[in-house]
Length: 252
Image (cartoon, rainbow, N blue to C red; front, side):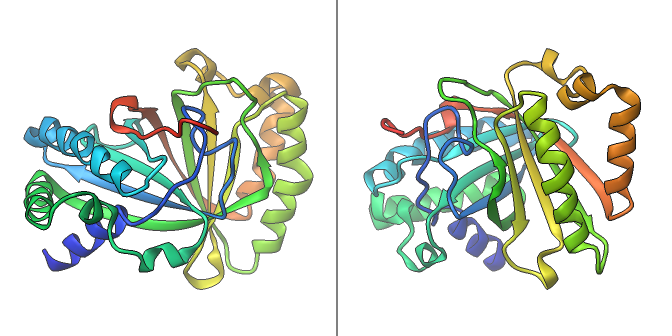
């Protein structure tokens, strides 16, 4: 319980700076925290109410953006993901926004209720690779995000990064894709875990990959096969934006 509470507290620590609705992909920060909550099946409404309730306190403490998602495919229906950009890891040293925005007694009650509503929480910090990303087009909204994670095989890190640079990014640009962000784990041995976040406007867009439609199925499969030799995985989840649980910046 102590470790879980410590992780929960850390989730609220980041001070995100990003654009509204378009979430992470227009203003790329150096880091992003991914907090994944496994919520008790009979406590989903309570959990959502707690997150919405705490947003007023977060904003009171200066939080300008925080993005909430439900796992729609590829995970448990009781799984929620929160993505929070940050400009520096030094933000971890600041007092918790929820505690700054609430009285001491209200914050204690809020965290106690939160602990009762969840089974587990996983926290990770990702380093944004803006050099390998394509910002979301201005004015575009995206309610669905494809979260794809792979682990690069030992000794193949440079090969995989080269594949993204020389093959995947040009292919996405040629297919007129935007809203694609690459991340590496900020910590861990060799930062071998890579994550790709891709924006979609509807479920219909997920019916076939834009790059596959541009290159053709055979060429697309061949390109993917090359990177498959360098990685383990992937793990894929489809995230659905929850606007009522999110905080959006008033000015991008």
